[in-house]
Image (cartoon, rainbow, N blue to C red; front, side, top):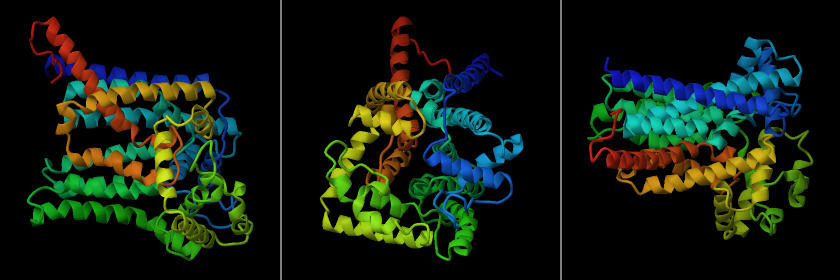
Length: 435
């Protein structure tokens, strides 16, 4: 084994230990973390799963598919393994946050693996270092939320898909990518949109040969088969076809209403339907109306609002884009961070960290290395952006699926700068130790 390979391996392990240590350090620095908002649902379902009762009916008093099952089942498994399901909140929070530190470190490793696959070992190491210290990723990983698990599954599916074309067993590798994609969909329902870029990632030329068509067909079929048991469960429990969740109606109605349209401070921002007068008659009957009926009624109301105010779509997209990139309203960034129990100081650090990385990413996007990356890789963050921008934008959590690609672009810029500097100090000799 070459000495450079050994050194590279040592560097990778050191970065991963540092990434894990930073996430644990943040956990120790924020002992006042509380289970709030969406985290209440995840925790309640996880407790119910851990004691063997499956998805909880305690939240709504009836069968529910509002939350996708991926994260609650993983969290419930952790609660069961560590015996904290019926212990005080603090004990469960600690287990959940240790789990988040592990998931966050896996995310760092996968960002590095993706960068190595696309851009070489030098950029891969730079990407890992940047991902390790990126504050928004640390904040998301240590929240009791589903986004970090989704990011891990999304990146793992992409890495597997990129390997298909060079694999001796492309259909088997596509099967793995399909399972990972299916699990991502079961974690965040909008993950379904990732199947588009993933299909092109595994679809080699010539497009219509039997060998080329096999991997994309396998990927899609396996992804849908992975989701199918939950869809069947929903059909049994809700007596309706619900592929993953019943969230869409609440998302539409929370944004497409007069209260949000006439908000001059945070235009087009999602809000709880308890604060929306025009929808109060609909949600007043929530305790007695089946969840799927409520979802359909709210979806219909949201679509009708869009039909009456088509120009408002552009308003929502514009302001949600600004919110997603933390250039809308400093107080709003603090507010949305607080929904995952992040304090104002840490929220500010996350915003500043993102801005620094965004500048680096813009610089990286101008480099040839970025242009050489296959288009379907960059399509991943674009489709994830489109999946939320017309509904709601809360940072740092809703930007989490985009952040690995921002880090990737930033790593291109950093590696280019280091390469240039090293070349000057060595009189033009090649500086890539790791390639």
